[in-house]
Length: 127
Image (cartoon, rainbow, N blue to C red; front, side, top):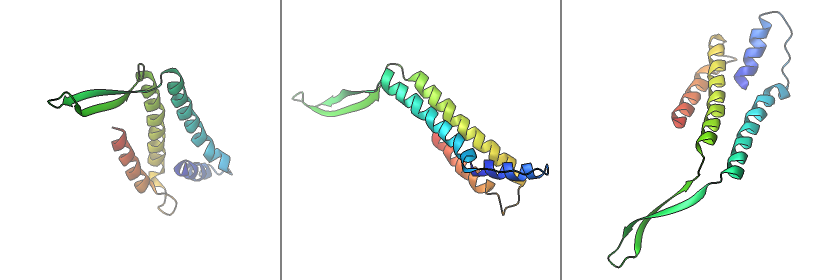
């Protein structure tokens, strides 16, 4: 949101117009993406909740369990995971686009290099 604000101010100033950016202008996209994530996760929890399943992977000679593996599973998790991926990768793409637009701004105002590195790490974590 910082890059969006800087882009809006500096690129709007190049058209010789007065640009005013309020706190709500910056917080609106944040709340929109947060609400989208909360909605998707709430629907997933309500309609297809995760269930813990454990499978026995090893027994000793007396038939006692010595090793087991467990995981949370859901019957229909694919649409929710795809929706979360679409929303979150869309936000990441928007941030990359804003960093690209701010690449030529003076270093006094822009931190595009550091933001690009942070976004690169975020992309690595997603994949």
